[in-house]
Length: 381
Image (cartoon, rainbow, N blue to C red):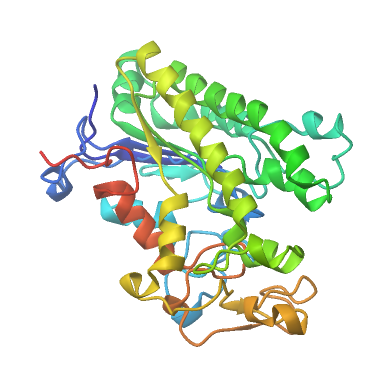
């Protein structure tokens, strides 16, 4: 089984995360290697209602991050405060923040960000056929980003086939998180979990197909994240009225919605397990988003977060009954009436949809060194 040392290229495909050219083995010792170039390809998808890494198609101007913290190269106005998972990973390997793939192809020394706002695992016609074309937040699907990656191949390796093979063999592909936006289509259309469950087999298959497509392109090391616990996010807590017994006594999260996310992740893990014997020369890692967010709720002090119900740092109160969530669909973060908390590092939820820089940092470190991956990206030796 392959192990990575240090990527040389980062390519970000809509939450498909490709960390490329870290020497063939990601080891703790290799993190000290500063001499060889790092190419990390990050292919990232959208998370929850928006992307966890949406810089791929945005313009280059940075939006002001709370407390002046660094941001992705070009996050959209609704992006989370500060650095995202991809930024923390890039910095850990000594890379600069990645430029959007559509912004500047002149300097791809360290890769590019292919993320698309609202990206899905499934193509738009899938939703249109189910009467959801008007509600899906889809500017491009996983396969669209993979095609963008193919189109940019000449900019990464344009000499020999062997050069490309070696380059991508020394890369980490982060494929996801995908699925959140696919499920948002039926959920935000008011169709409920029963309908959303019907999408699950196709979503899982779409992610699996994407992983296989990347392996066919030369990917050797891939991390495929699951989804976050939907029932913990203020956007859903504000939208849904559930019986009292549906809310976790300690977390305040909606149990049935978290179960839905857990089931998706269980199916995704199973799909990855099926791929591993098919591609014995590839290392396919499951990246855990679910467990850390649950831990942020149950053990907030461990991560430096305030002990409170799920609450957006940036937003505005909704109804009196749901004011604690600080999420209002008519005054979302960045819109008139919304304000940001004094210290985003005390919150795990930035705007009720995305996470804060601090939360993404904890997750990135958990992917790199454990325990938030079924095997850490960075090996102990």
